[in-house]
Image (cartoon, rainbow, N blue to C red; front, side, top):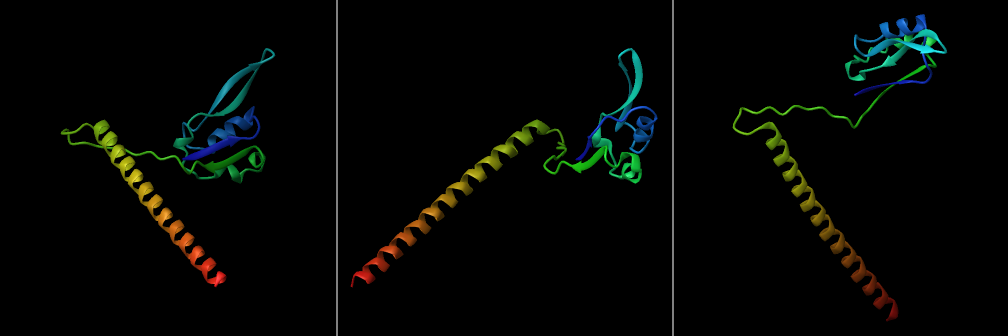
Amino acid sequence: MPDIILKEEITGDLADKFASCFAPGVVEVENKTVDGESKKVAKVVNPRLDTVSREVLRHKEFEDKVQLTRIRDHFIFRVESTGILESEKIVFDSLQILSSKCTMLLKALDIKLKEKEETETSQNNENAMELDT
């Protein structure tokens, strides 16, 4: 998922220019009143709609004011059902199966780790006995 980080506030006519660099709905320009004075301020409202065109980076005035990144561990997926089972039930059952498989994997890894430790211990004991003789 795209992530748009404003390093500093973008105001005035620059706010409109900034908003025009993104797909509709990504950035909105709000009127903010400070000390009785109204000013335009750019605000990121829905970064998911961004097409990652990086158009904003072509403008020198925004170079130090914005950072474009990605949230790499954010996933969106859809589960569809034919009606026999509800989508929520399919997801819940799938997560239970995944959880049980992870538990089995952890148990198998524990067994392998114990076997390895036992092998290393017996080898160390044999080496110690050879040194004694």
